[in-house]
Length: 554
Image 1 (cartoon, helix red, strand yellow):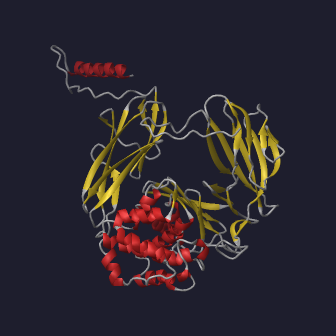
Image 2 (cartoon, one colour):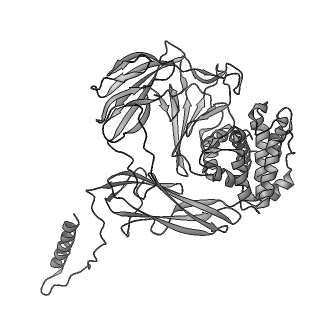
């Protein structure tokens, strides 16, 4: 019978990141140079004791070449022998993915490819997991590794020789993979500058902890598109893509990582439209292009056949209409929101609301968010623009200055300068990068975060605080240059490892039964006057008092 997942509960007592109740599935990917077009995947299952039966569904087209502890079933899955642990299954699978007739790019061109020297692939994954268990439902943990040179993300992997560079900014760790086979047009430093500036500038909701960026080799491969983003935060971009263009595809694919919604057909245009628009706007704001290039780029939406496409009807999209006409519609919406709210809101505000939407997002939902943010007039104008077979003209430089000249409210979050961290009321230094804060079970950690409006107008902010499954939010309103500080308290009632995320900052906390309880310091005088004794006795007395305190604290 299928395993049923237990829904997360929003309680003040978070669940530790690591538990002993895990079914861990690790997929190791390897190249098969003698079989170009295929890769090999070995799945190792670490099976917790409550399982009595376990069946794994393999990806479609998988060709099993070896098993240990698993046997093939009649329908092509593998079943555990209920004894071996760990159990493994190795299979070969076609790694090449070509563009179909209904997808962007020339039909038959590559979206993912395996060559004689390298592989840029989607990570194959075990599908349905079924079985019988005794006791609590296990957590299912999936990991991917690479056998040999390469790197694996959440959904994309590169197999082959490469150089990897990392940079941390705004609570995100960016990894840039440059294959030996790739001729990178932009400097890695400038790619990092471009995407990290976008990370800071986009205030549209939570950021992913990890972002994987792969420069796809061009050479003899005919790629269907200029880049692809999939999963939470993995993407590849053609290595020959420039940065100094309104069609900045490094930023375009990064914007996709900040989109967190499921759109119905009539709202699907927003995905590519906003990624295209933001790539152009943020490149303009970074002074990489002049306004006239930005203007000409968005004005492509005025040309036929894309101008006649209806944004809410994907069947009418021709010549990348959701990108070209869509970005012009999205940009004009941004301009109208800024004008209607005197710069207090922007398209960011709408996308932030969309990212918080529960369930499938429809055009009606989008209109409702715009109405609440910018008023009924802007919502009605947007409804008309997204259902029309025409499109308005691109705005000029004067209109741009009028709407965008006053920078909207933007908020920066940082640990408070005065006592950013305390445990049970006692100040603690922030842990060094990569280190954990260790506390005792039932101790309370207090985190102070300062919010500053670094934009040009007054605006409202939301400051989320997350620990495991628990989330709370503080809100406020600040004028340009104004700051305020919030404190969040969290008591850890169970031992385990936790991640506190607040305003783009994060702290790793380990709660343990054996940690020394935090006690207020004892004030010990620098000299102890004992009649008839000298300084040596005073020092000995000081050591004695200190030793007694340590014994009590231990």
